[in-house]
Image 1 (cartoon, rainbow, N blue to C red):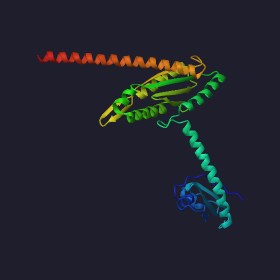
Image 2 (cartoon, one colour):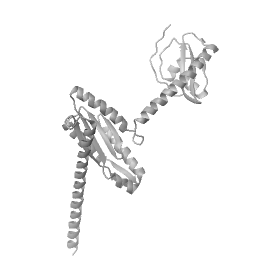
Image 3 (tube, helix red, strand yellow):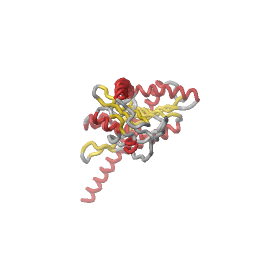
Image 4 (cartoon, rainbow, N blue to C red):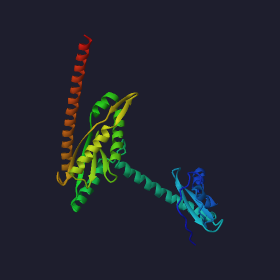
Length: 289
């Protein structure tokens, strides 16, 4: 006999699995409706009995396995023992699967920022370039480097430098499109891969990303905030190259050119401000005389 049931979310600890999790032992011939009620559902069910067993590995609870029947008080000790054996095997398999998934994720993720790492980027970029070549499409590769990062580390400490990297990573993740990727490449460098993005679009996105980072002020001490700035350069497949090595080299060179120009612009601004301050000082002294 079949019965249908819509999915529902149960408040943690209030459903049958919650009871099993707390007590670490099977629940035999429990009322299945308790799960629906815990999920806030008033749906009716023809199920009359439930057998719920814990999934435990190395004394660690990882979940439950439940079976249901339409007859009340259907389950006996034989059923419980059988499901217990199934749970022993299932728990080990599920645990190994979770560990494998976590290991795979960790191997492709930067632990500081939570962004994909270099290994992931090369896997992703190889696929993207192959797809773009097949579809005669474009892919933009953007190299970004945090300005004055060494000075931040030397002045305020590496823990502040780590916070700066996390803040930049968060901003870049928000600004890029959902199907693009942002990678922490090395040190204070980030790489953004923009699928289906030509030169003009890449330039617009470069400016947008820089402005987003330039708007960030990082609190390094109580009542002291410093601005974060980032330099960027882009290269576009296939116009600037057909391999990721060539694209990276060209984007990197353009990023350093941008960094030099931005540094020179800041130096000119400081010089202008110093001259203005000096002129104001002279005028104030002349007025005082």
